[in-house]
Length: 379
Image (tube, rainbow, N blue to C red):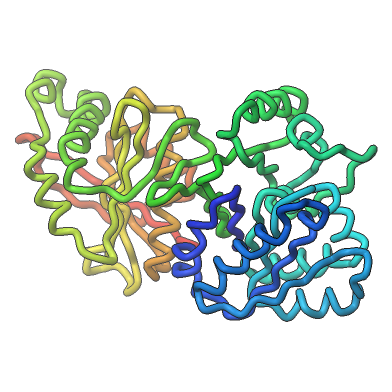
């Protein structure tokens, strides 16, 4: 499954298509905007976003004059399906009436990229019922069914005046419906089980409120050093000793040099909350000589103790697996100290298994014994 569920801004399209491989034939459905005065301007903007990438765009309107057989054939032939914004109820009704719903469902299942803008993003969610609280368009009773291709309902325009209060009301009324709110400059990118909210160069994980994920930079080195220091003091005191760790301070200069030396396919990702860098993950090729070719490594993975249990670690772990797969690694390994009980439990729960490899070294003058975990990674 590959989707890009944009809110309003299509600025994420070029970057996402560069990752997926830019398709050449795009079927664009403008139907949600058919009764809006700004329809033509909205359509031009959407079409231009794809023609600027060198794509051919086929405008497939599902209005009352549309021939269902022709509509379905044109959608089935597309290498990407893009659906614009407007009235989500009209859009869902026309998608059902023309039979386009089954064609879109089949395409998404086959991995054809789907780009939904506002109403187009809502269409593939589990239900349109919560939109009674958020949409400016009158809701039929009952509302037409959404396509149910994505487990969350997208709530667009979260940064527009008054809209967030409506979104909060929708969540309160439908606590059983997973939802993700997007600002007008954000896009939700879904690739199989990996998803993130992108805005410019940053990404906000939809499961962790207020947290931004982005690639690490040299300027992050002091905060990365502080996270590493805090995590080490909290997690390793049982086997390294509190007094020894109290005097330990990870040098920022070493992190600066390491980040400066970073080269692909290695990558560094940082998680940032309102207090700064709160976690980081570093992936790259596995240096161990006894692993199979094509094996990567989750080399460094730390979060600040103040955020343990908040989901930030899960977010970085999910990114790490996706980044390893995107870099072409079929399997991955990681090392953990044998007495470091908390991460050992976490890794086992996340699908990592011990492969029997052990290495011994010194840290702060104390001998440590590390165990290697391995698992398959999937794109």
